[in-house]
Image 1 (cartoon, one colour):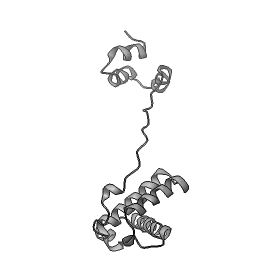
Image 2 (cartoon, rainbow, N blue to C red; image 1 turned 45 degrees about the vertical axis):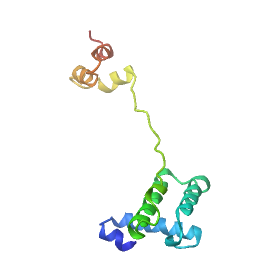
Image 3 (cartoon, rainbow, N blue to C red; image 1 turned 60 degrees about the vertical axis):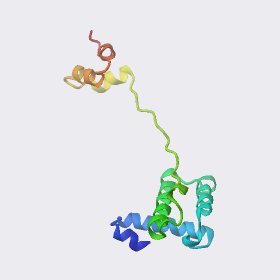
Image 4 (tube, rainbow, N blue to C red; image 1 turned 180 degrees about the horizontal axis):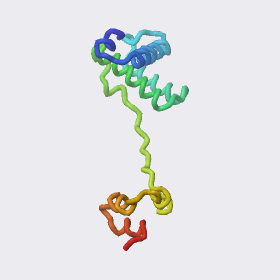
Amino acid sequence: MLEDLQIRHYSPTTIRLYLYAVKAFAKHFGKPPDQLGAEHIRRYQLFLTKEKKVSTSTYVLMVCALRFVYTHTLHGKVTIERIPFPRRKRKLPLILSRDEVKVKTAHLPNRHVLIARSFSQNRTDASSLIGTS
């Protein structure tokens, strides 16, 4: 696996983390990855999320490492679809109130133009926001 990572010019940090992730996976079951299959991967993913309660970034790192080892090192022993990524949490965009926009743009010389361009699809909202008609 190390050579596969090096051939593809992965960074030293990524190499170190991927090797750690695959080692932890193998250690969890007490067997090398070539003796473990899709069901083991599924059980390990459940272990990471339910028992170990790892962060999303750690979980994604583990998934990427397992996908790499099973795709490139073990040449597709387990299909990639069997190693799913977690669902991404959707964040709502930050929406400022009218007062917050006024405070944040008060020092700008052409704030009216800036705000109007920001709201170019709905000019009436921009006009009411900056106090022009």
